[in-house]
Amino acid sequence: MTAVLGSSAQRSRTMRPSSWRAFSGAAWRNNVRLSRNGASIVSAFVIPGMFMLAFWAVFGHAASSSGFDYALFLMAASMFQAVMFTAGGSAMALAVDAESGLLSRMRAMPISAGVAIGGRIATDVLRSVLSLLTVVVLGLLCGARPDSFRGLLSAFLVALVMGVVLGLAFTGICLRAARPVQLAGLIQGIEVPVLMFSTAFIPVTTLPDWLEPVVKHMPFSPLIDTNRALLNGSDPGGAGWEALAWLSAGLLLGSVWVIGAFRRKS
Image (cartoon, rainbow, N blue to C red; front, side, top):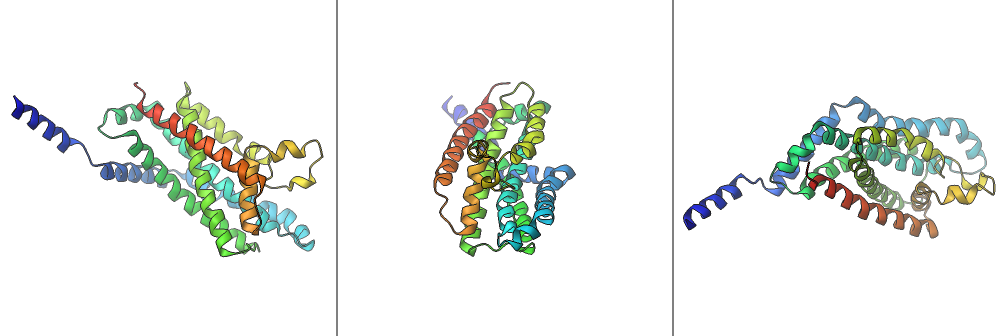
């Protein structure tokens, strides 16, 4: 009897894929899907750059003549926009998996929730890196002058963290919904309007007095202002602490929601 049980346990261990193999398989699948999704490629590599070029073409000359580095101002906003669009696309992809039944099949496989979600995060980070590089190159071509390479690298890394947190938060919200795909589509639809109601493209000091504090403390504003301070070589101040609070809350809630939804019985 002991020999039979031992043999069964050995077979179970043999059938269970290694964590690395499961992680790399999930990441590979997600990357293949991304390469075949034209809409995701456009949203990651084209739209953020188009926004930056459009605003720079309209306001760049006037701002530059007054000594204001508007290209650098836009770079911080477009970096956030790039990772935000990546997060929205990730939420949509996982929502589609949930409604198609793939997520239920993955739950039945002998892999942990962390490995499956880690594969998704790895894909998001790769996509964010490529998208951010596109934005940075365009910004430099438009005349943006970061204070230092260290500041640019810090802003780049902070933007990556923002993307991961937003991806977890968006995905967690969608997977808790009765209709994940519809909610993911809604999130993608309101990303640009909500971004406009922030400090992304217009200096907060140009807003009416009654509107300035509202826009300044919208969730996206401190995140963008923190990256802007890093690019300028200045102290993020209160915006940095506010951004840290938003990111910490998003990371905690997003992780709990996503892993909980993955483990939930169908």
